Amino acid sequence: MATKEKPRTIADLPGVGPSIANKLVAAGFPTIEALAVARPEDISQRAGIPLTTATRIVQAARRALDIRFKTAREIKLERLSVRKITTGSKNLDDLLGGGIETKTITEFYGEFGSGKTQICHQLSVNVQLPPERGGLAGKAAYIDTEGTFRWERIESMARALGLDPDEVMDNILYQRAYNSDHQMAIVEELFTLVPRENIKLVIVDSVTSHFRAEYVGRENLAPRQQKLNQHLHQLLRLAEAYNIAVVITNQVMARPDVFFGNPMQAVGGHVLYHIPGVRVELRKSKGNKRIARVVDAPHLPEGEAVFVITEEGIRDPED
Image (cartoon, rainbow, N blue to C red):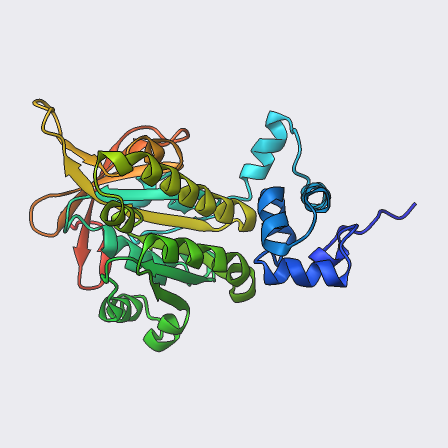
């Protein structure tokens, strides 16, 4: 007996006719993956369809993608689909278990000049490399909240890898985010752009700056954290739905109550302690050397690695 072919587009899902399909696409749910990780309430509100219909569509999308209870062995086999992007430094790649993972959020935090933005620039180039060179043969989407993106660095990094700088820059989709609402709206747009443009990496540099600037004072802490939590879950859904890598950077602040050890901690509080799959602290060292430390990753041991920032990009130290 012939097996039933799996749905390939949202129009192939049971109960989704041309009219509803058009509404879903217009509302920012263009793929089965986007529907499977969405809340029915959000779909109902944004697409203007009944909640019961939205619930049935989400259930159908999850069945199509085989989202259900699975055995640990099945999860192990699924993890084999996770892919990795090289950072340009073997030391840093080894620390991260082989590079920047897809299906998760990797957070880099540290003081000004610790190398956060340099790593983001390098990854935007490296993701375009073929898999045998540590890339994913895909494009990058770069959300810049502080105006730190520099095309000059992309150009020099591309040349160092023997790539055409203009072609590399054409494959980086850049947008400046001017406030937290705009930042979240850009990510919503990515649910449509990622599959259409073959985007394999999304960068938010930095993820917390607008939230800090807009929600000042203790009385605004709760709404800020709630909105930031929503934004991080939005990014996580994007990573999981399309098997892409999401990299965020974060600022640090000094804790005056810490007398021993490192007084610097990442901005964002407990929300950022729990959602990113890998958290890496960056510190300055002598000259162009930087130290990366895995602070939290359930599948990685804690450890440190030394890398350097050169004219050509992120590399290993020579000595």
